[in-house]
Image (cartoon, rainbow, N blue to C red; front, top):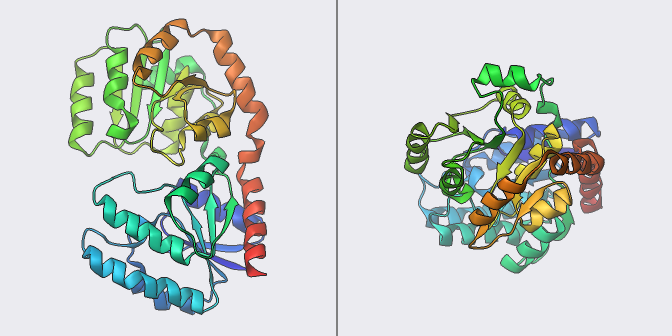
Amino acid sequence: MKSLLISGRCPYNNHQENSLQEAGVDARIYENWGIHLPEHLDAILDEQPDIVHLQWPESVCRHQEIAPEEILNAFPDVLGRLRTAGIKLFWTMHNLLPHDRAKADFWRRFYQLFADHCDVCCHHSEWGKSVALDAYVYPRAQHVVLRHGYFHQDVFPAVEKSKARQELGLPSDARIFLNVGSLRPDKQVAEIIDVFEGRQDVLLLAGSANSDYAKQQIARAESLSNVVIHPGFIDDQQVSLMANAADCFLFMQGDHHLTSGAPHLSQAYLLPQITLDFPYAREVLGEGAVYIESSERRFERLASTLDALDTSQLNHVVQSVKSSRRLWHWSVIAEETRAAYLQALR
C-alpha cells in the first residue's frame, strides 16, 4: 500500500511519514510546501500511489503568483483525474482556513473544492469534525478522527533547569513562562506582554517574527526587563532547552483554531501549560492544563491565575498529562491511519 503525503516537510509530516513506514505503509512525502499541484499531476500519476494524502490546501497552490480564478478552474480537473485513476484522496483538515485570513472568500471556495473531491476527510478531534461538517459540504467523503501526535522524537535529553537558564541568560530565581511559535496577532502576543508588564515573572517568547506586528512586539520587549524574545526559526534543540528552563508554557490562541500544536508541546516535554479554554485543548489535555475562560475578560483572568498559581497545581497538571498522552503517540496514530487507508481501499 503506497501513500504519497502532499506536501511539505515539517515536524507533522516528518512524524507522519516515519510512523507510517514503521507501521508497514510505503509512505513518502512528495516535494515541499509551495508546489503548484497541477504542474505535478503527471509525476504523481506515474508513481501509481494507492493514496494521495493531502494536508494544507494552501501548500499546493502558488496563490501569490497565479490568479485565484485560474486556480479555482484548474483544481477540479486535477483532483478529479486523481480519483479517476483509482487513487483515494485523503485530506487531513488541519484548519478551516489558512492562518493568514487575507483572501478569505477565495480560500473558502478552494477548501470547498477539497471537500468536494476527497474520499476521506481526517479530523484531529471529535470537536473539529463537528465544526468542519458545519463549515463545508462533503458529497462523498467518509469522516475519521486521526489524532495529532505529539513530537516525542524531537525532544532532546533533559538539561538541569539551572544550567538551561544559564545557557539562555535567564534569571535563576524567577518563574518563567514560555510561549513558542510565530509571533502573530491570532496568538495574542501583544496582550500577553501587557499582562507581564510590571510583574516579577518572566515571559520568554520564541518564534518566527517576519511581520510588522512581530517587530512591534520585539521593540516593546526591549523596553521591559522581564520579557525576552528569541525571534526567528527555533530548532528542536533550542525548544528543548527553553522547555527545560521554563516553569510553564503559556498560550492564549484558540478562538478560531481547529487544531493547535500547543497542547502537544506539554505532552512532549511534560511541562504544564496555561491555555485559553477551547474545545481542542480540552479534548487533548483534559485536566492536564490550567484553563483561562475564553471571554472579553480573559487577560484579567490570566493575571489573576498567575497570581494564584502554585507548584502543587502545576505538579497535578503534569501528572494528568503523563497518564493520558499514550493515545497521541505517533505509533498509535499510524496504526489507526493504516486502518483508515485499508477501509477506504476496500
